[in-house]
Amino acid sequence: MSESSRPIGVAVLGMGNVGTEVVRILTDKAADLQARVGAPLELRGVAVRDTTRTRDGVDPALLTDDPMALVQRDDVDLVVELIGGIKPARKLILTALEGGKSVVTANKALMAEHAGELSKAAEDRRVDLYFEASVAGAIPVIRPLTQSLAGDSVTRVAGIVNGTTNFILSEMGESGAGYGKVLAEAGRLGYAEADPTADVEGYDAASKAAILASIAFHSRVTASEVHREGITGISAKDFDAAKKFDCTIKLLAICERIDVDGEQKISARVYPALVPLDHPLATVNGAFNAVAVEAENAGRLMFYGQGAGGAPTASAVLGDLVMAARNRVFDGRGPLESTYAGLPVASIDEVPTRYYVSMKVADVAGVLHQVSGEFAQRGISIAAVRQEGAGDDARLIVVTHRASDRAQSDTVAALEKMDSVLKVSSVLRLEGTDD
Ligand SMILES: NC(=O)c1ccc[n+]([C@@H]2O[C@H](COP(=O)([O-])OP(=O)(O)OC[C@H]3O[C@@H](n4cnc5c(N)ncnc54)[C@H](O)[C@@H]3O)[C@@H](O)[C@H]2O)c1
Ligand SMILES: N[C@@H](CCO)C(=O)O
Ligand code: NA
Image 1 (cartoon, protein in one colour):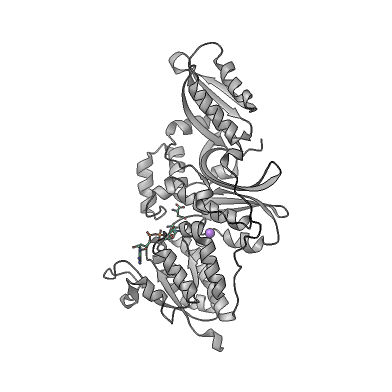
Image 2 (tube, rainbow, N blue to C red):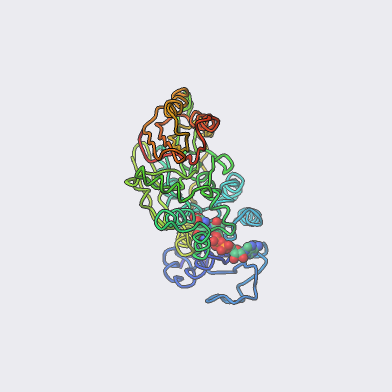
């Protein structure tokens, strides 16, 4: 062995759903990993909250409740951060990078807010910062975007990037199962975040959208710039309504380059939307994720697989770990952060969307005319109207063609004020269609 194939010291921070699987694979596959890296990966320590708890297959001597001391050890070359959240993860990663150690993380919340600071620290010390596991678990999306498509121009990245909400929506759509029960099951299966509000309110998907938009469009987009709506307002009634239009409901993350009055902007948005049953995303169920990428020369690419869960996510972490370790051995480096395009983020108001509006109306002559008049006044063309029920149960469902989201939401606000519209019961956007 050459001098460069000295063992690579690895520190793992956090031993929850993902950390446990990473440690297992590091141990079980040590020989294969060594062959792929060109040097042995040696686990120097595992930071946990409770060092007194025994953990299968882990030497208790490796456990520590002082992650900062572990990160600073001279014999640690690579740090794998799997604690999650901003504190203490940000400081630990910064310390590692500043100390000349490469970092692998699955932390989308952190990468979506602090990518600039962390990338700079990595560049200053010429070390790697990899985060494939932070978006869509096992599915390779970061590396295809930052490396395979580095010579193309990406126009759109869109799909299902949150396993927990997709699991909940799939169950609600198929069996009509109650929301709370399905969410608890998602937690038990290791899909949900430590605080599942991040999943169901769309924060997790918004973080992923920010990461995807940043790397796809060579700009910097943070989670707070992503328009975000969660799934807590979605009910069985919405699914019934969706079925009538041959659609299902999915929480989508959409990142696009759009033209706003001649200016190129980024639209990054997360919301539950109607998706036609014959669209590829409609059949992505459970904790599976799917990401469609459109690029000027490559055309359309689809990525599909397990977007959450300990072992699938650990697969992506290990992929990054092998890359970072090989770079140590062979003195290479992964791609740097690329933000040269510096595109601004569009407001949701500027984005062309399609709306589905279901309302309870007074069963009197002229209601349809009044309602369609509100859409027409704002230049919105109607694609379909359905009248259902009669008397106290008279309902009107309108599906529009594409128009600015501002015009659509203003129309809904106007409908809510009309005497003949008793209640706007459901408003959803419609995606996965051309018009
Ligand atoms: N679970 C998934 O499916 C999944 C998928 C992709 C990415 N991720 C990301 O991976 C990361 C970890 O997720 P997880 O599901 O394993 O979470 P988890 O809550 O199961 O694990 C986190 C672990 O970190 C430990 N911890 C907290 N503070 C600590 C500290 N100061 N020192 C040492 N340990 C500490 C906790 O005790 C816990 O065991 C998060 O950033 C998450 O967003 C998770
Ligand atoms: N909580 C996340 C984990 C994967 O990033 C999800 O459900 O998708
Ligand atoms: Na991934």
